[in-house]
Length: 142
Image (cartoon, rainbow, N blue to C red; front, top):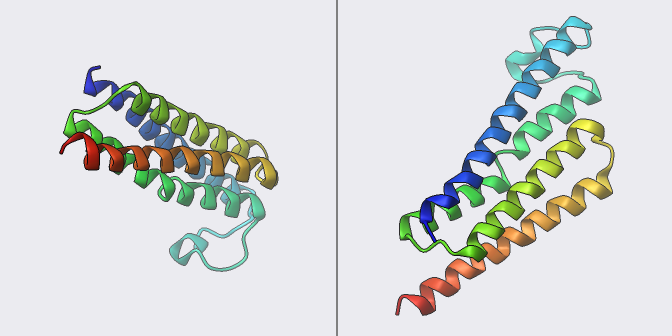
């Protein structure tokens, strides 16, 4: 299998990050236009804020937490040139979990059970991916 195929899920994750960033921008503009926050709030991000703005900010922060391990993992297996069908499947499963997680957060961030279930599924996929990488490093390259 061509190792560069792993770059497609990586690009899909980057696209999601750009989308979530744009979403936060528009939510912040909405909060300012509705006078839910004053423009000065964004200097320190302290003070009263509506729940929808806090949810968008938390969502944005989430895009830079667990996915970091995905980016490192994909970069490592790409550089090793050791991408197989299982790696590619795990990558797409993780990306799908992040898109679903984002969809739940944007549509109705109060659905904690749905959101956390999808998060844990993605976390588990990533755990398997890292476990496979460790196995490959220990046993395939001896």
